[in-house]
Image (tube, rainbow over all chains, first blue to last red):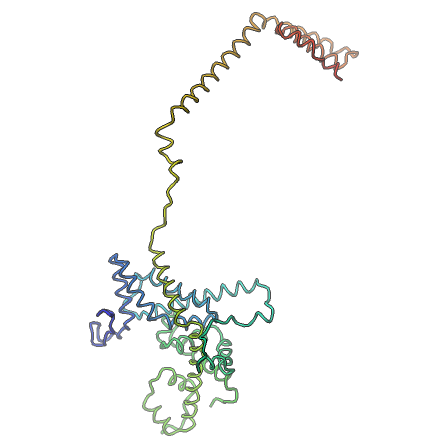
Amino acid sequence: MRTPSQRAVSPTGARPASAPALSKDSELAGAIKALVVAGDRDAARERFADLVASQQRRAVRIAYHYLRDAHDADEAVQDAFVKVFTHITSYREDLPFEVWFTRILVNGCLDMRKARARRLRWALPLAPAAEAPASEPVAAHPSAEDRLVSNERAREIVAAVDQLPDRQRTVFTLCHLGEQSTAEVSQALGLSEATVRVHLFRAVRKLRTLLSPERSLV
Amino acid sequence: MNRRHLTDDRLIDICLSGPVSPADEQHLAGCPDCEIRRTELASLLTEIDTAATIEADAAFPADRLARQQARILARIDQSGRPGRVIAFPAGYGHDALSTRTRPMSRWVAAAAAAGLIVGLAAGHLSHDFGTVGRPAVAHGAVRQQIAATTMREAAPAMTDDEFLGQIEAAIDRGGPAALRPLDALTPRAWEVR
């Protein structure tokens, strides 16, 4: 059951009218911070479970899109949530929690990608049979969505997104898949909003070229 | 109506951000080309979104998310606890060293110390009794013999063995009488060579 502080705050609530309404997760993060500051860690931990449940699906999608490996994505998401709780006292309640959390998550994913690249630099090349991506257990009865994943088109799309340069992929992932605005992404990545938009436009143009080469731009 | 087509960036902006200005809306309503481009772009983005989302969701079914959440909370619980302090074994603790000792071991230590003292004293006395009144004579004999050998160093006929034998004989003459029979049984340096 949600407590009053967990409910979404309307634009006409306690916050100033000029400030944008924060999400319910931002309110929840603020409440957790207050509990930690007050020394009630157990209660903070209980509330944090709600925050994890709310952000977890989005987090694993972003992390998986970055890392393309379920185990790495799992680890990155865990690390990000643990870091959030550990440093919750440094959370600024006037900013969206999603932006802060996404920044932590993306930085973790980037670090993991760098570490993986370093490992691969020293690793022996795999045999062709072992190069297939590790498949995670999926539902026993494939749904229509599962069939789409195995579709050639889906593979093309995934391959096309993988071809994007890192920065473009990051911006595209956060804007499109992470459902964040360019302003939020600019905050999360520490870039200007104009730069974010440039990367986003280039990413979409490149994807369109890769996925539909017959289409010509006007 | 604006005759100029919408740019790609504007179309992307419309498809991703959503808000469409009235002017763009009016243009799209009257320009089939731009409307087709927008529809195609929106379709492509939806396709990408669907493919990526389904792929991630297939990799993370609900039970895996539940396990992940449990691990996150477990790690948080773990990080909040102070480090576990393992007690030092009681038998080797400070108390065992500083307080009680067993009476038996104390007697054994005292007996060992007494034995050592008695042994040292007896050895010292026996050495003194054996050489009492003789050291000056013995040392004088050694000095005389060394002086004599120094004088003989110029004589080319004496070998090294003979020289060492003479030193031994000079020293032995000043030794305890009780050791002379034993010394007579042992060979000399020159005899061994």
